[in-house]
View 1: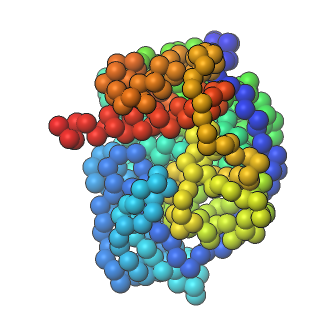
View 2 (view 1 turned 120 degrees about the horizontal axis):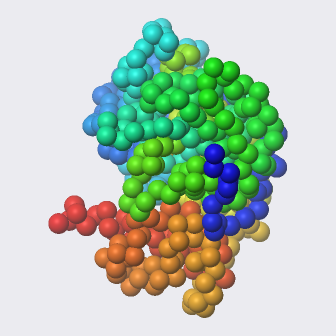
View 3 (view 1 turned 90 degrees about the vertical axis):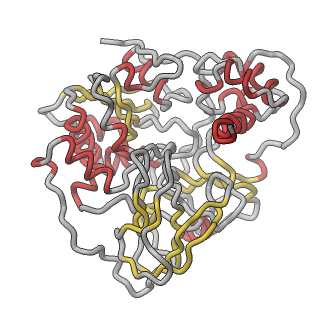
Length: 441
């Protein structure tokens, strides 16, 4: 058994989780309107199936999957389709979205539906039910879950890794899920093991969550080989490749995926959502979101309908403080600052962090001093200093040759840079430029 339980490099940012780590999950009231972008997952955006004026109930599809690496979108509240058009997207662009005027008098009870009995379904049927429910990875990347659970037949999978690290500062979504819904997490693990035909699962949780460790260990099924492992607190412990290295001692080669070393990694919130699909029959129409930071009056862990606008979420948490300056979707290391309060939360929104003036860095940066701190921090052993210089010159091909594709955009390099060079943002722009090149050709 591998016992090293760590990965090399990484950083130790302040955890800043005390604001919400002990705050129980509560359900937020339904807003007057939800906005559902058709692009809420990695892969091809969903294809519209409704028109303006249509009445939809909670859980009804509004868009269908447009290809294999795509997922359907479902109405998160009962109401009427008000508009279909471009709307601010969390990634900073404008994207097609469905606006639904929520019926204020509706009890928000979904239509009667058949709840699939997972014990009587085979792997293919389970995966199809997960696909139809629109389940994606809830750790932030929002990769379609059904794709992960159906690797190519020539890729032998021997282990399911369940990621309960939640190493991003501030966020406590996964933490509270494990504390309050451990049985649901375990059922999701059981279903994933059945889908993949594997006999072993490992659940990795950082040591700063002792109550989550206790809850998950207490509920481990006696008839399954499921081990729970406490891991040292270090960022980015929750990244797939880092978790595989720490728990199994396997290195995912450059350009390869976890399945190439016999592993499928899923987030604990994704596992709980899979269980919920087979417990209620409902698709993924709501998720747990941490709203936190010193810029919000009432930090909370909330069950939020997908598509709720940022302004409504902030209002549900008491509003901004006087010195609030910046709003981030996700955590401060990998999250994206938002420009519009009308931006909706998507399936992949793990948290909303509101920073004050004292929390934000000045925008100014200075020339690189060749200190090497970014090299010492990079968990995948790239040369961020070199990549940063190439990015400033827009030398995309040379960045690609220097293994830009292996960059996790984890933010370790930017966090350690004494010159305040926005290295992760430069690398994100470079990746976007490289993705556009084949289309232009």
